[in-house]
Image (tube, rainbow, N blue to C red):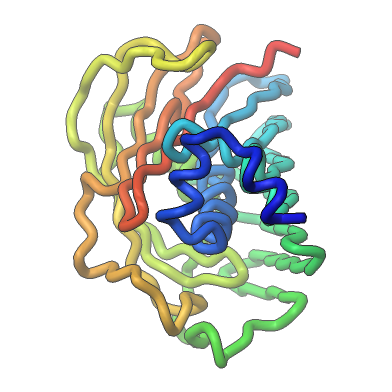
Length: 284
């Protein structure tokens, strides 16, 4: 059945299937979707709060391989984020992923701090979930199933001091961009299954053209991102973090028609090709 479906894929998809391991792309796409979801946030000064919906598309080559819908709400000094994501296009012929992410962050003394961060997902009929509670610099978390230490590095308890979730980290980054047009910052990140340090650096300003319908068109601040894994990453992988450059993972921050600063595009260069994320306003 898989081979039969594959034979009817367009020529461009057949070439990608032939030269790239689909399983590798799919697993990477899942991680990338989760990461991009976590940075899909923006700040509002509306005292009474607001609700908005957005979605983005994940592209590999000429194919759309992932989609996510994002619901964002503010209440006073608290931000709530909910997203639903899934694989799309030819990846669903062989592998399917659906997931949901929820987070809440609170402003204290002009700084955003994490409260709750949780993810659930199903990949090839296998369910996985993580939930973290942050209270007074005490991190309590639960994973189901627990980390398989035959496949990934352990997460040492000593590394969980003063960590924040990735959503809260990028809320603080966007606040920084809004205040002084810079994004340079380093964070200690924990998402329940991975502990890593995140460093982001300004690469300059440019004009981004909308190369897809409804994608962003306008001035952007380009920021490069590097990740230093400290636990939860795979024991066997082709990824070599010490060889990463800030230009390998670029995030383009722009101001939308609503006046909000968003990550409007993300480009990631990897050994198997380029993954592009485009932010698109959901008008439905």
